[in-house]
Amino acid sequence: MGKSRKDKNKIKVIRYITVFIIIFILFFLRTSYKYYKKGASDVVEAGNLSESILLMSEKSAVNLALQHEKQLIQAEKAKLAELEKRQQKELDQVENRRNVFLTFDDGPSEKVTPQILDILKKYDVKATFFVIGSSAEKYPEIIKRIHQEGHAIGNHTYSHRYNYIYRRTSNFLKELENTEKVLKGILGEDYETKLVRFPGGSFGEKKAPFRKAVLEKGYTYYDWNSLNGDAEGHYIPKDRLIQRFKSTYNGQKELIILMHDMDSKYTTSESLPYIIEYLQQNDYEFQVLR
Ligand SMILES: [Zn+2]
Image 1: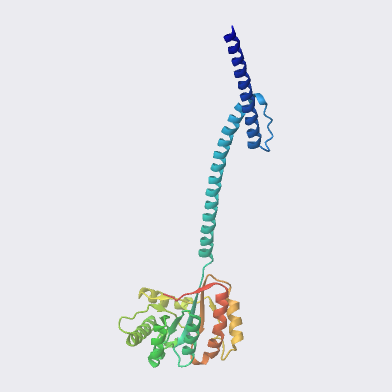
Image 2: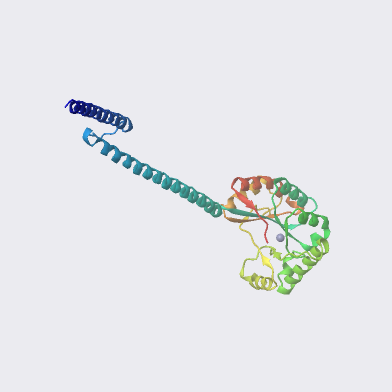
């Protein structure tokens, strides 16, 4: 009997301890849950507390995974947007790329051609010189300098005498060949240029057979779509040349500017720095004809 009472007491104590432990656990869980879910709007009843906690941690795990996934997607999106932006920029650059070809006809000359070469050197830009064969013969050193400094040389006939060169196509071709010989004599037998500029331009029905003959012989000819007007009179002040250039420029993507480098065209060299700077400000790349 005594033993049974003792056992009963023991059971009572165990029961109290168990209840105490349960209360303690519940209290602990409730506190940690409140702490964990601070700010959450859900009201959790004490009865489903542990279940809720389990659910919430599962939810949080899912949320965390989702959040992580979302971050990855956002990072991926940002990367793609950045790539698209870069590609668009490159495309814009290609589309906005503008080339200018400075061309000088009727040289070389003793004074003005070297002046022009000095200016081109100073600005580190290249140009194309359409030379007259007979003048090249006179100033071989200037031809060498043009070539050595990386400019292109084109053929502008040997004599530039309209009444002879445009009398028949064979005259025209003979003059081109003569100039080629002169250039080879100065720059070496390996030197070759197939660039041609027709004196006075290639336009007009009258020159159709000449254009055909030139192309058949493997030459490439270039006219122009802009000019400084230095052929429109004598000693035109540099400001007028600059104005004339600006009025013909029109922001063209491929700009071929006609200018002249005979000694009488010294205002052309005076105006050249302004024209180069204007083109540089308008993002033109300086190229040579080929
Ligand atoms: Zn000319």
